[in-house]
Length: 450
Image (cartoon, rainbow, N blue to C red; front, side, top):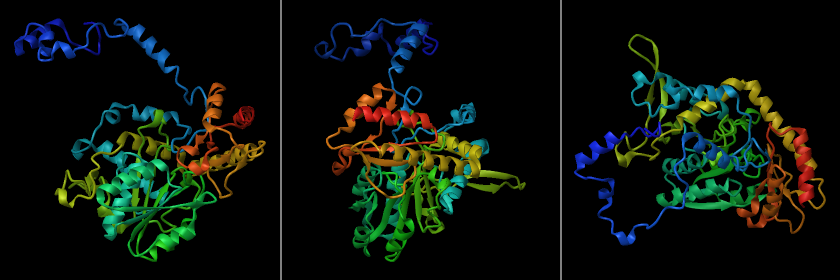
């Protein structure tokens, strides 16, 4: 046996070939003409033993720029937040790490309780009555919220702010096209949704207004002013929220939101080179039975002992296809557990403290970077932990980021990629992990690059 993870013996191979009636593995490919087969030896190394392979893979991985090797000022949806060590300890337990969908509640009580706690935490954070057992990510949760709103109001028009994450808007358009929904985008003013244009776009055919707060630019939207605009026409207000910001900002539920979604990545989930993450989805009680996915409910058995079960499953696998409201087929249980452990460890005071650190450090950084010659803050709207920096005329964000990378920094996001009018603007994220020294040194490095 050459490899411990490939337990195929020569005897195993021989018995399988005898079973299918061939003398060699080559016979399996006899139907493939020689003319289309690759001739020669593939350009790769000889087989490596385990030690050599591990060493080679480590050399390759060490070429990556990561949060461990570089100070990150890059956010735009995935953030470098502190992850308490207890999280990896808990999620590495085999009963969680290897668990799949808990269809049999009698043997899945631990998994079901963990999901139930996640739902409870999300309700607490968002100020909503009901939350489901997590979604694939924030973008799919956002699109599912739009579909739910259209179904609940029986309307086809969706009004979405351009300050919503560009990728979430792309997913929304894909889903809307499949459902025959119309998407109207509203421009921004000073970094937040232009409320005059928003009000003009809403009418009796509008199913929902969809906004993000803090938005893609990091600015906090005035949800209290947006809410009456859509409710006057009996439409729904959908809010995409940063869960970490909800530790310090008023809950969307108290500000009139009907549906609150978002990505739980800031809650103890690693960026992992772009994913996976974990979406959350919470609604007001009247919309409970229209939620995608499923809900874990708390009940008692015949002896009065507390137990947990899957309930209110709205996907087509469990009910007639024509009555299904979603085709979401799974949940991010392991990553939802990360979020639950994070929230348990931090508590209300910890969440408030982390939120305040993000605000203070990002505002300190904004003040320092805004002093650079030729640079300025693009907007004056209040922000959480991200802000938009306008670079000197003619500066290229991509070229500057390439220089910063060589100096040990992950620079801010190039907004020109998604907003042509913001070419030369950098979206800078500053989390609780960034020290004053790192911020000051980043300022010096950026000054040298521009």
